[in-house]
Amino acid sequence: MELSEAQRAVEMAQAAYERAEADYERAQEPVRSPGFSPAGDLDQRKETFERARISLAQAKDNLELVKKGKVTGGGSTMESVVRAPPADAARSAS
Image (tube, rainbow, N blue to C red; front, side, top):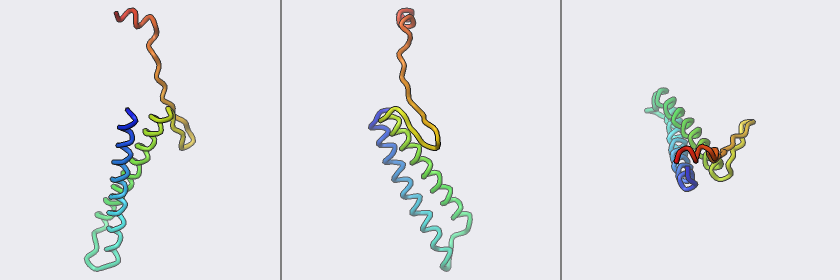
């Protein structure tokens, strides 16, 4: 994944997160007024919001991995290591 691709993924995930958050907050308001949304609708919007939150976190982790070569969080570290093929493998492929 390239840096620009990772940055765009974060931007798209951020936009989806903000939209899902706003939809979820709006879905909670009608519960207090006449014509409220059914509980299933609220549950679906909450799930969409949670999925968007997770997608945003993943996109940010991917961006950090592309930029720094490693990601730390949740008590663990993930590193991206790129290795060249062994020298004899390059000769045998020719």
